[in-house]
Length: 223
Length: 227
Image (tube, rainbow over all chains, first blue to last red; front, side, top):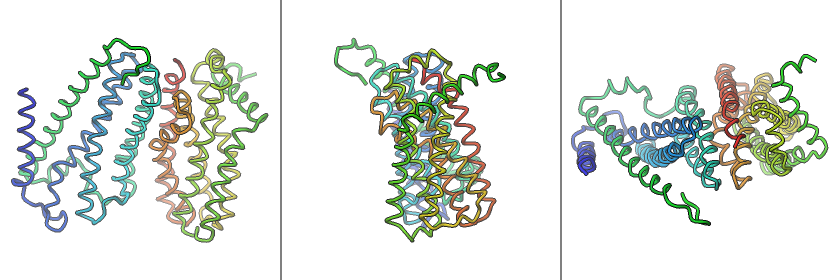
């Protein structure tokens, strides 16, 4: 209870700070106001990739150990990852419209986020297509690992090899370049997003654990 | 014979030979592939005709034909096993890795036979002259190997899933996208005669993509194959 309330207050403070506390950053769009989206877009994107990384680790562990709980963890991580990936894509498109006039132009960065979304979608299509729970867990684990191998290509290599309009991708340099006000709000937002993720993960895992303990009824398919 | 001393390889080649013999008798997979590719090619050529002078468009269309043909044709190797009921026998006959290698080689042969037919036809129908022939051939070679590599394990996964047809394409697209991006870009450069340096980046990406996907497929196939 305390955790949820403090998370709510924290995120409210972050949202308010992003509009009232941070000054407009010159160089971003006409007035520099569009830079505020950095507080929402970047943490969402980081969390999306982190979630997928966790899902892959869970998949590897599942293939090695075979515990059903690991499969549930992979599923929850994938679900939450999809959500944050969608948020990142939408905030990115909004910013793209404000900065360059187009919502979507298949810039390498936009392509990579679209492909991450497609990977998630394919993962859930595969899960939905298999009825037997052991087989479903195994095959979706294999697919998650296979798809993960293409993510470094898209996230790191393609944007370096082909020119992109996306603002500079260097992680550490960007943090140093940020003014202290922006840095504080940005890091707080990152912490808040992570807290949000942990909270939602916790709830989903508890739900799925309870569902898995139900006594099976003939003819009814769970999950 | 020397090959008998390497049971792993001889079993893989046995699987390859079995599939090739079956295929040669019925020619079902090959004809399905070729008909699909020819239909697509004809439609494209008919509707676009002379305006394929744009090398980007031409490159993209070529790889679309190859990609969707691969989607149609590659799943056949595993679905055939399921339909004929020979899966159990194959599982008993060899370890998963030689089976994968055999199937992968078979898919490579299948795709190459398709490519050898379709690519010259495509060049003829689109009236394109390839500026950088060696680069083009290298791109097609690496691209087709990549399609076969990723396609084989995805075919195995899709064959286990319930709705066999559409699942394969949905699963394959995100995984094959880096390959398609690099291949289309390199092919476009080869058509237009652009800088070899940019093509080297693409070819490098294709090469490493192939290596990574193949290595991962070898390691993961066991989990797909064994129940």
